[in-house]
Amino acid sequence: VLTGEKGVRLSTLAQTYRDREGGFVIIGDENYGEGSSREHAAMSSRFLGAKVVLARSFARIHEANLKKQGILALTFGEPQDYEAIEMEDRMSFIGLAGLSPGRPVRAVVKKKSGETIEMHLKHTFTDEQIDWFKAGSALNAITRRGRNT
Image (tube, rainbow, N blue to C red; front, side, top):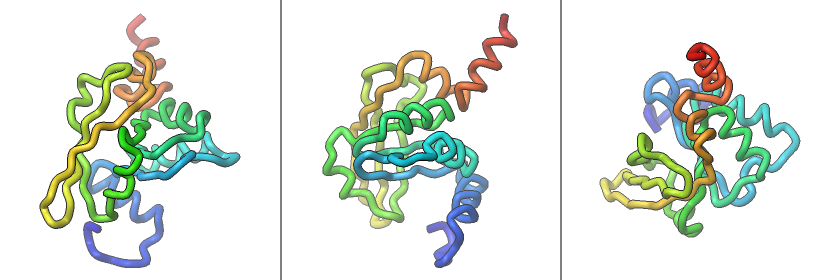
């Protein structure tokens, strides 16, 4: 989307978004993360620069692994909102400093046309998992706690 170039390898594209834009959002359908390499899939997403995975639903273990990697795992408040997302859309997640258990996350989707759509997204983060997100991963949070004791 940034350059209009076609046929770019996924890893190259992800690194471009990570380096030029600070990261990217992964949009998934039902049971996102189903498969046998879930932990590595979450680690790879983090390494490549994913900040958010927004899906209709998650494979339970993959969702937990995303959280451990400090990735914001969200589901659509209205499952049909999945259909409104297009490749060239830009997403902003509002109020993450106030992220708390059970409180929806507000997202604003800006379309290429300039139109904006507001969405309310769900999450299952606990207070501890929110600390992981804010620290960038569970390991970072544990390391930080160790330094403060």
